[in-house]
Amino acid sequence: MKHQNFTTTFSVDQTPQKAFAAINNVRGWWSGQIEGDTDKPGAEFTYRYRDVHRSRQRITELIPGKRVVWHVVDSELSFLKDKSEWNGSDIIFEISGGEGKTEVRFTHMGLVPEFECYGQCSNAWGILINGSLRQLITTGKSQPDAFA
Image 1 (cartoon, helix red, strand yellow):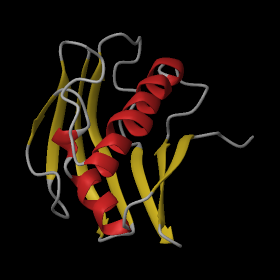
Image 2 (cartoon, helix red, strand yellow):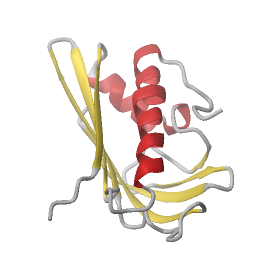
Image 3 (cartoon, one colour):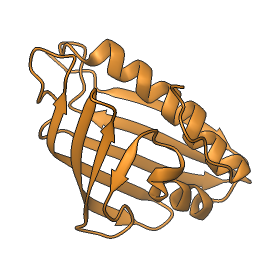
């Protein structure tokens, strides 16, 4: 049986380098508190949103203008039975450009429909990626809290 990881894709009229810079400006699009470096290979950063979500990501790939990968080292999602459901998953941004357009493909490898979190987490990722991140790439303006 093949697992269906959560994936969403969008295109913008910006360069791959601009998309890459915006993705790594995590504070500019991921609502919540972020501690640590978000733009250095091997660095770890912690994301916290109220008392609902806390996770620690390690940057395992950082290829300028092409790809960003975070490995979820530790997580606690308070609204789940298995609060550590994200542990060991990978958050992947693939960037490709051509003909004046750039495509950003987001995949949360390990966030599958069999998981309790899939519905709520895929919905939240959709808002963040297709809304906040896309806006940051296209306008350069961050959105302080996508869920306010």
